Image 1 (cartoon, rainbow, N blue to C red):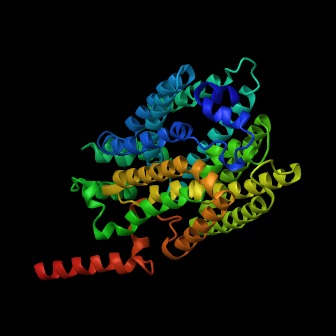
Image 2 (cartoon, one colour; image 1 turned 90 degrees about the vertical axis):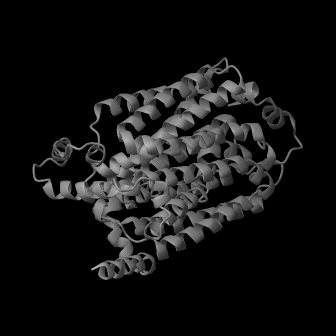
Length: 463
């Protein structure tokens, strides 16, 4: 929004409005502007590691409550900001909220859900993210029209509404059975919760699995040191690779900078915000479709469909912009709409594959003894790579120009091959029996299988 840029980022505003000679791709190249965006991710990165011991020692609920409180404080500071320092501090507090919530909420969902519904339930998390993006874009589109130039305050302060729902909801929800067993010597409370959420009294087999997993986890004092052991190598690789690949799809370029990107190709302020609303709507719809089919088609099938779809659209957009978008001026209306349509196809591809599955798969593959640490690594890696992309994108756009789409398209090709060859299918596998999928995988069984052979040999020697 122009009043927002004028107040907090006057150099960017001047460059955009008055510098007629500046290259289309370089209008928004400002380290202060990217610092505002990416400060959230540095805060999230640090707080996701702080969240791990809280989630492990006190349960999933306290982490969600801390996240909600941080969201409330951040939205208040952002809405009341009078200078860029206050604005960035509010953004940092929002980052703390995202760090704690991203670490605890996917774990909460995976531990509460039935194995056959775990995929759909966990994609509910990404649906929430998608609805948040869509709501934010619609709010921005409306508040931009407020005369007086203070509409941005409403945009930032309204984050308090979902933050209140999150905080109150966390107070009302029960703790997960896994967490109750892990942090209590009395399994009866866990059994009561398990009976309530499963809708049956016949839960003894699942309870025994949880108690066994908990007894193993209690022998682990330093989960971050434990997770680097060879037997957890597949999970550690996925905890790093999946969030890395999720970011180099280029999706955050579209999500965070969609209005800037649309202004780059020549759209006005209101039209660029409306375009962001359209892409947000497409993304949310596609995520709902993913929730409906993920437990039927499986994780790998959706990864492959989305990967091919994203690769094709990114290359096509790159070609159009390379040929038609010169350094000055914009695309014709027809081609601008074509780019918008292609971006919608790209967003749909992400929203039913790497978007939800980038959260679902890591949340379901870790055994209980390293689950909190593993989720923290996944979240932290996501924030780290998001920060790098967010901090560098505007400078990359200025220098790569249309080549930015070929850059991300190349990474999509690499990640699709990675999933095809190295990720086993996890649909319908109970979360406490997930280690079997690695022992049956053509590549990972070489690593974890050798560990089992060594353990058997050691046991026989002892006998």
